[in-house]
Length: 398
Image (cartoon, rainbow, N blue to C red):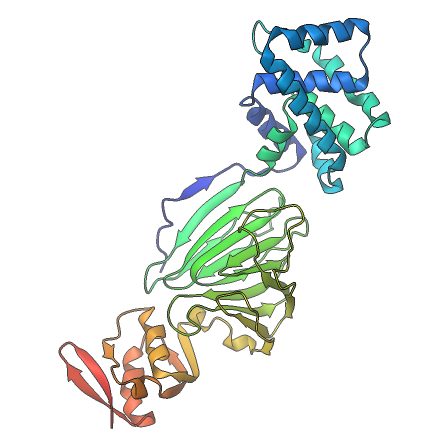
């Protein structure tokens, strides 16, 4: 059964290389403040060295409007921050150096009116003597079309964003557009179980899934430069390429807990100790208690609602995400939880009012589509009997 995805659906064109990135960023830069562009240009010229005429022009620009001095100071501080630019952003910055310049405010005394665009690209070349090459490249990008803050904001825009939701008793298969450019290459796939809600976001440097409720199976297309993260309850699961299942439900078996089971490959499970999807400088990746767990095929962990991760346990590959085959398995599971698990897929009509009966353990593997057989088997495997109660059936002690 395949429900229609919810209305929370937004699709951005995917970046396929530096040329596409440049075009996207050029469009994004058009929305930036012209004053920021002017200030960035003057800061780059100032840091590259101004002759007497240039100093006079700068001073005239600063005196023309009180906002100019404030913008200049802010942009100068931003350029200083660029000295700490991470090396992994340098290649992306260089790819954008050919972005066309954005026009300054009409009538304003902008340096763009006195220097051709080609010259503007040459101004930052001497900055390597003052700051690292990465900062010089970032300065060139700023002068070419937009401020560093604009670039960072653009980099954080998702290429693809969609919310998937299944109703009670429904399941959904999803193909994500995160494959490579090769014609035969396929992206990651998701399988969502009943009553599941998941937000999917694809960025230029990472892929993020937010499992709000339910359970899902993930088959991740390996892209080393774009790790795949799944947030579920208090946990964050990180992979590059693998197959694994995550369960985080409010009812049924393991209610309130988060279960991660690996079918193939390797995953890293850690506490999500900061806001999901937000990358903070200096933030710990492995939770407040500093603990992270590496799981391989055939391993499973369960975390409680506080994010405490239990011991690693072995699990058969045939027992992972049995719901994909329309089955559910119990192992000394209290009858109340077993019934609650069936209730996730549809109404059972079973009533349990006696706590002693509700606590009786059940086991075995059952078809989700043949719940009646489970009901009929109860008096044979447990000391109970079934008593009609209106349109329902009460399970009482025998």
